[in-house]
Length: 188
Length: 100
Image 1 (cartoon, one colour):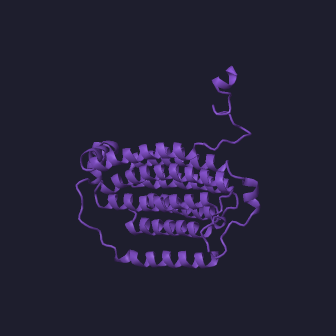
Image 2 (image 1 turned 90 degrees about the horizontal axis):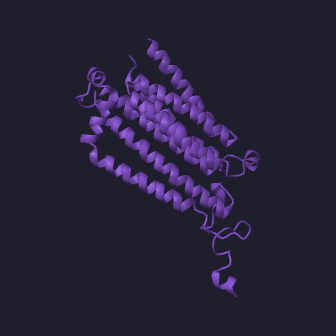
């Protein structure tokens, strides 16, 4: 009973903050409402006995990804953003399309059947602790995807550096070596 | 005990809101944020199903999806920075060089 109440509270907050996030004029408000949404999704993970994933959700999503979004958001012109139109020209058609998609997905749900049960019931996970259980699963069954995830993160680090590097020589703030006089010029 | 269908309905609604955000907004950063909403809807579905199936597969998948989402945010926002540096805009309907 109490868990159902917690679920309903989290669901209400998740849906309302998601709707606010896609409708706010100011993108900073959007990012902050998505922050609230991520915390409540972490609450739902706790309700599903996934403590490790709840911690990861807060650390990686709320602490990492959203901060990245906020930093990038401050690079663009927020003053102009608040004044200008926030939706594309054909937004009514897009609304209809997304409502139809959502309703058809909801209509499919009653036909869903659960598959075969696995070998990690809640009692066993509680006995092992969730972090140990998921670690055993990742480091044995999913070892190759784990290594690939590391590779993807390496590519993201290198790609982010290469993309965000400013290699255009702007005369106003040029502090690179090419602007400084070379040794031969100095000697002349 | 919460039925599984509640989680699935919530995930479906969240996914549809993400689709709505991608289709409707002009700002490319908010479109990326809507993609994060959709990824979170899928994560919620996977965690709920793995809990009700007594399995850890879905939760391992969620772990990898969070990793890929972090990489996607880094690369995507790097692309946004380059776009803003070259075009001075973050609106997707201003990027129309290939339009005939």
